[in-house]
Image (cartoon, rainbow, N blue to C red):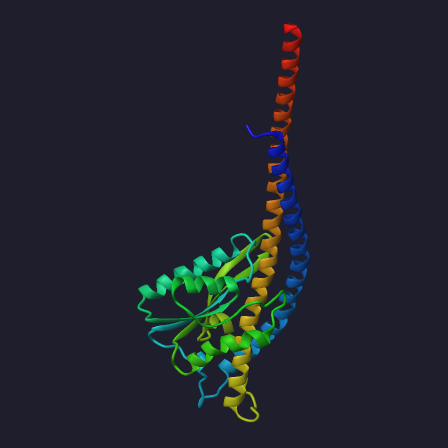
Length: 289
């Protein structure tokens, strides 16, 4: 059995760890509220631009078809945008979305996909892709607590340009969708070509007057729409990160308290045994005299 001093040292160590996890829980709770507010604030814009893109896709522009709307019969080259966190200590958040991405990679290889290009948003996803040996054609890390579109555009645009030039047949995005504080859902969605699930079918259709011309307007509109989808995915992932970290740190703090209680019980038993032994020795010595 460990000595009383060793047990006291362990109790002190766990108490210090619990202070850290408790502080991280409080910080994550504060950041979680702000991340959720940013995520919800971005939704109206994403919905508005989605409706506009849906109307444009249904408009009578017979002489021009945007590459983002063209579906190919065979998909041989795929792009993957993997959205993860920069830091750990957020439970199984990154593991779950990486598992979804890995299953998708295996499925694509089984379906005859010959080339996969990855764009990583977040340090954890970058390390995951490098361990698989895929390599990342672009990446962005250290985004901080607030998603910045200007940081996302460059890396994502490499895949978008490759799709427009015909070098990729489809682009998918893997991220974690925020459901509520206790639930975050890993998602894999097709980003390009744009599907009916993403655009939807407007209740009414009408024709537009385009300035300067239909191609310029539709090109800019659909590009902004895809950027809005990526931004919304990153915002959802950041809200999920802070929620998962708060829950994970709360669980760690509760577990630390249980460990401290168990160690305190062992310490009390050890101390009681030592006192009993000393009393026995005193009584035995007195009897011998």
